Image 1 (tube, rainbow, N blue to C red):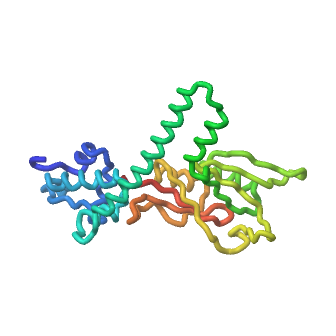
Image 2: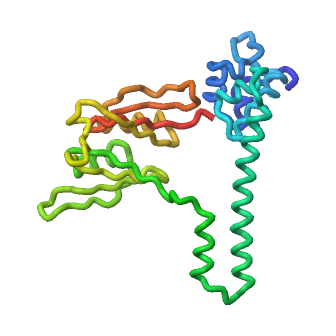
Image 3: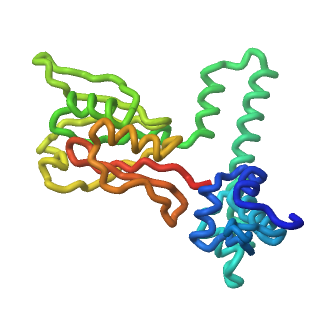
Amino acid sequence: MGTGHRVGELAQASGLTVRTLHYYEQIGLLTPSGRSPAGHRIYDDADEARLYRVSLLRRLGMNLAEVQRALDDPAWDLTSAMEAHLAALDARLDATARLRSKVAGALAAGGTDLVAVLEELTTLEPPAQQRIVLLVYRDIGAAHAWLVRTFGLVPGELVRDAGGRAVHGELHAGDGVIWLHPEQESYRLASPRSLGASTASMAVLVDDVDAHHASAVEAGASVRQEPVDQDYGYRVYSAYDLDGHLWSFMRPLD
């Protein structure tokens, strides 16, 4: 890089954010080699080369701790990690190739029975098709409205019984579905408000943690933890909902 780059210049060149580079420095993953007379971070050629390796390893699916071991710990076996990742990629490619072969064969046959083709195709799919998270609330109707208003979740179906009481609710958070379930003693299902403690936590990825935090605070959320960059590579804040379930809203730092 010649005379070196400042953090903003390196962020722009790498496609990362300044916050991410600051976090990399905080955890010791990428420390700038120098400082300008005014105290600005200066990254030299070696720093840029290290960041390039970090980015490559991240694209291979390694988390930040694994990347740091790969770059700094001579005893860490990068070859084994790469071989495991390669095996996973090969398995995906094999499944895709088999699917392509079946689709191409069905097209070539022309008169192939559609039901038979679909039966064969389903053998390539995993048995688990979708995850649905279930949370227990005392008042499903109130919880449904609160979660939409305060956390910005997308409202789904809200089912009421003949007396008008909400007995089932659905919400959408990105690609995930959340069902709201009433307390039910026979299944030992109770709200944290009844138990006095929460036995599970919900984590949701958002585009902007700080903006989501500000919106939730304005709507009256009880914040447990302000936005913070965590060692495991995410910026996170946490808040309780009206029944005491703990929610975390996060975004990867890079």
